[in-house]
Amino acid sequence: MRTLAQPALSSVDELVINWHVTEACNFRCRYCYAQWDKAPDPRELFHDEAASRQLLEQLAAYFSPDNCRNPLRDALAWSSLRLNLAGGEPLLYGLRILWVARQAHSLGMRVSIITNGSLLTRDRIGELAPLLTVLGVSIDTADAAIARDIGRGSRNGSVLDLVELQQGLRFAREINPALHLKLNTVVSALNHREDMSALIGAIGPDRWKVLRMLPSVTDALAVTAEAFERFVDRHRCMGLPMCVEDNHDMSQSYIMIDPQGRFFQNAPTLKGYRYSRPILEVGVGSAFAQIEFEADGFVSRYVADGVGA
Ligand code: SF4
Image (cartoon, rainbow, N blue to C red; front, side, top):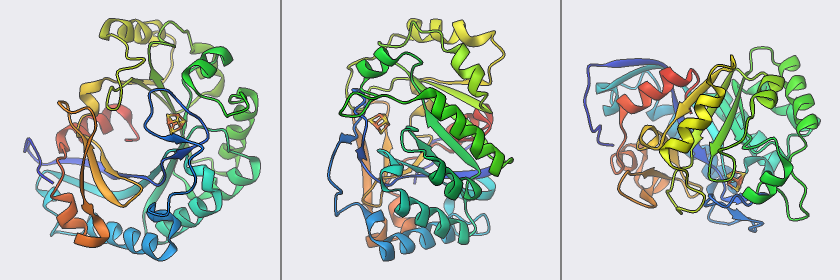
């Protein structure tokens, strides 16, 4: 990890590590790298219990707020560590993700998950919600036709049932009143004209993160800065807990691990990602030294966002 700018020591409540456990997803968003209906990839580390446990133990030790040997501490201080489970769609493998969440929890990490919401059954919510500090759901539109056009639907054409989702999220809050509920919306060429205020207001998240589609993999569906700004302006005075993230804010400001257990990072000049060697081969410290991470970018995003990634 090279901290690109070394500001005075900044401090945050928690450091967030995003583990993209799988590339598989039951949706097929046209702007996404995830692969629709992909069979479980044996190289995806989280299908292997022993390897997953090893990874989690190494992360918990290396990024412990008490580990003075982590060079990131020259740029940043944090008092707790959160593992954010992402995909693909992490709930495609519901029991496995539950196991990972329990392991991380037992190692002293806070745990969060970001899901497309389609597999948030009442049973799954009942098992997961007590383990989570943040539940994130990605919702790009309130309009079923736009959802289908984006690719936010399953093979049979069914899209997220927003009424069921609202019931599920209410249930999650009932069983874990401290749960922080977060919605993510990616603004693209297909939804930038939409008014989502009624839906967001009805769900009542603690945070609504609005992201401009990042052309990491493809330029398809990209929106101009002006169109993105108009979407933001349309929702700004609605009393919604909106936080806005443009492309620049996203570059190198996340700590991300890919399904094969490598750190990876986007870069402003690249269409695609840079990867470290696998963490379990070279160790967390060596792998982390192979990617770039902007601690000050993480801090400003974390402060603006309130709950980080
Ligand atoms: S739901 Fe998320 S992971 Fe799945 S295809 Fe869409 S953006 Fe990708």
